[in-house]
Image (cartoon, rainbow over all chains, first blue to last red; front, side, top):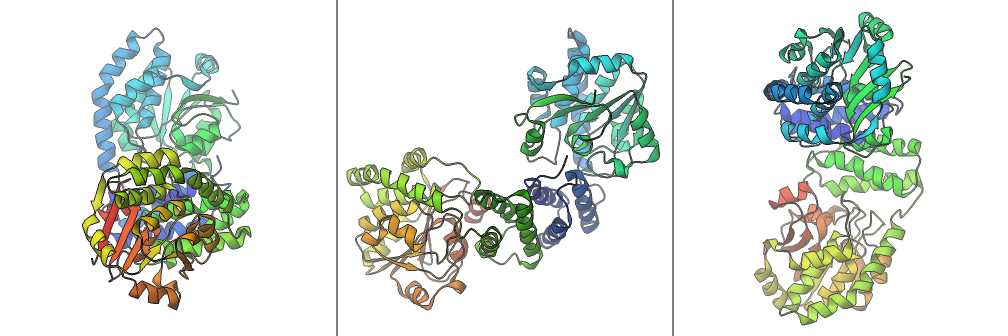
Length: 281
Length: 281
């Protein structure tokens, strides 16, 4: 996805949020915003927003000397999600379509996002999304692709949400490689966060190579790219991965909640919709 | 008032809004945002936000070759307000305290603002604000200053709101000089807008010299500065005038609705409060 004009004020808003998490004072905060401002004229709108966010968060980490500003919040989100996991597993097992319920739970977990300017309450939002209608629902092609798949590449998104991805991995019953970011960025998962979420018990965890809050193929490792090319099924969770991969030419299944107006508009759905969108499938 | 960090994303948001009003395409819009971005590292946070907005709107007018992007909207706001004026005048005359009611009507008119990212409905908001409690209410010193005043300097704000200022000018019953911006900026009044609002029938209209969406003394004409220094009573309408004058050392009465979180926080009131605040009085 390209960068839209409305992403630009949002970069500054995100920089303020991230700077404040580190406890930076106003002078340091202004230095951060000045750096972001200097990047704007250099960036073509054709570039996906997370690639710009990548440079921005690098500079914030450098200026604040804080390698993982959202570490405490990530750990807290994982704890909260782990506490809710048994109820969600029960919910899935009681369901007439456990796979569909697992997908809903995994998408519901996607509300846990500090990049978007929205309050969330994991438990409340989880139960709400379990009942919400999909704005895009490419379920039939997903089931078909899954039934034929011998391998699944699952692109993870945020820490906390990760816990619920485990249910979907269990429900699919296929060998899964679970890819995460190669550096802490926002509240996106690193390998440590994925392990803390229990994903090592159900999948092989790898780093994608991307340090953006997204999967940006130009940043990815040869190992990841080979998997991405050859996996029978690719599941992409969340907005960032959609922003990075919405225009690739292989089949991808995007599972996400459209939390910002720009992404909702790019997808052609109302804001806050839940989406299960297939491309090239 | 100084510029707060949260004003920075808001400058970009305002630039997008103003650019879109002119019908600028994405390439021109990006050029506008690049210009705004280049200004950020140059601006000290000590500067009041409208002074930055002044440079920004100048560049937007230059890049879009549109000297008054909000002209149609200003005219429409004035028409709407003129249609509501008889009802408001009736409301004021029925009131047990016509002066207080006129102040409320004048503050209610302050919802008409395109600089703030908020929807408004003049008629609905007008009636709501007529009943709203003030968060700051320096009414007694105002009445006292007014009773002794032989001359009033009234600093106008937005077109449309201007129509309701007329009621307050009538209610005060003193000779009033009504100051407006010296160039079109946002939906702030120019002399033409003030005349279209009927203010020439109740006051002497002058330009302040300021081209910012505010009264910035360093931009003001000698004539205005003399009036500002010597007027027995100065009434300042709206957020922009507050941002420019909140730290001056003469008595000023600020009448406004705190429409953005930054100004609400600077005033120490909840967002959307109505305020009648005296300084040095």
